[in-house]
Amino acid sequence: MSDREYVLTLSCPDGRGIVAAVANLLAGHGCNITESQQYGDAYTGRFFMRVQFAAEEPSAAEDALRAALAALAADFGMDWGLWRRDVRPRTLVMVSRFGHCLNDLLYRRRSGLLDAEIVAVVSNHPDLEFLARSYELDFHHLPVTPETKPRQEARLLELVESYDVELVVLARYMQVLSEDLCAKMSGRIINIHHSFLPSFKGARPYHQAHARGVKLIGATAHYVTADLDEGPIIEQEVARVDHTESPEQLTAVGRDLESQALSRAVNWHAQRRVLLNGAKTVVFR
Image (cartoon, rainbow, N blue to C red; front, side, top):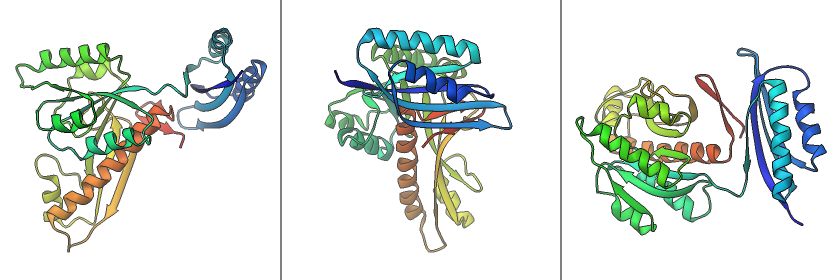
């Protein structure tokens, strides 16, 4: 009988014996650990762990393992999750009119380079329907105005439920999500945005950066919270630039950085490598 691979993640107050207790439990249930990473945060007093292991396939064995983990979690005050590695999280991508991040994610999905299963695309504009359809994905045009925003977000939540979506990715979706939606989807929405030193907000950020003569541009992928663009950071990417590069060239470089940072963040989330640690993350790469 073949084994099935799993990922276990956990966080709890730091203390002695946690790693040993987890390893002994898994060994006692006939599991073989293939990868293990842990981190103790001296500033918060929290311990974080990700364990990848192979276990016997019968569902009864999995049920027994889950019950044992629940008992262990109660002893240590753990927040924990157990996932099968062969089940990719169902993902909905939201986009506006810039298609570079969406195109990158869809290409990676088709090429087997993305561990998330993209099931549909949602946009407040119809421009990129052709791209979604070319990958044989459902496309939902949900226009939004300040007056229709509550109805539009209610429809979005209906799609999340109907597609059984675990993760929502904002691939340059140029709308601010409501505080209520952020709360309902906490830890389940990833956004990408340009990040400069200094940070340029509003329209044409790369042109603003060019006007200020920046030497470094970048992009940040983070979880969405009610605090705009201040959610826990998952990944960042940067590139050096100089005075010879035009605003259009900076834009091209920036789009590459955005695509790279977002795809890594989505992959790490899908592989259960990202654990929330208050206002920041622990990423087991």
